Length: 294
Image (cartoon, rainbow, N blue to C red; front, side, top):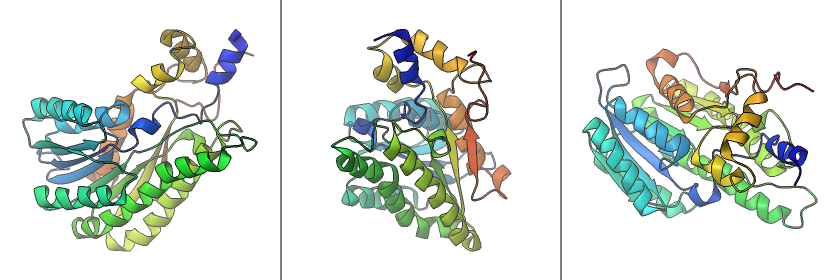
């Protein structure tokens, strides 16, 4: 594979370096008990055992949150839960579950309410970013996998969370992608799923605003997570991947999980009390410009 082919491969913004089909089922639930404006909040964040999800869990723990960390990989979620427990000294538990299993999702909410009594914030962070072409013989199989993961489970999670969020005047934060705004023929189903998630965000925002519940989404570009190395590490050194990607971003670097975690904190806080139905684009300027020379 030549250098230009490698760079073309890295130009697929809609291929989700932030997510993986093996880890779409991880969710985090927390009770924020610090003295900040978010005190006593319950926050739920999908996929909290690696990358953006793990960083968000750790960031919330630093703010004094109680957490429920869940996913299919029991050992990994236990590890993240222990990290958060050491940081915050608060109540942190782990629950093995699969977000594609409706019974598991129902159990997550029941367990959270049993443990914490309420829910203030839901962060939908599950996703998968497989390549998908319309000419692919497996397009319908890919469509089902990607739409179930990136959209259906978020619809179910949000539906189940609504009664609790209405009671607390809480909010929902969906993790979308720059791919919802920047189409690519190499990731048709992924782009479609994220565009649908953006519209779901707006529709829920209108439905829930009269009930005091806010709904927003965050649209990151490529983020430096362990999955970035898994995706491209076999092709070239990860530092080269970051170098190529960084040239595509006017701000001069790719996103860090901490960037997204801070955005989650902001949208969940009272500082964002007048914000709903909004997509927060976090792409270092990539959508509108590039520093890469022709």
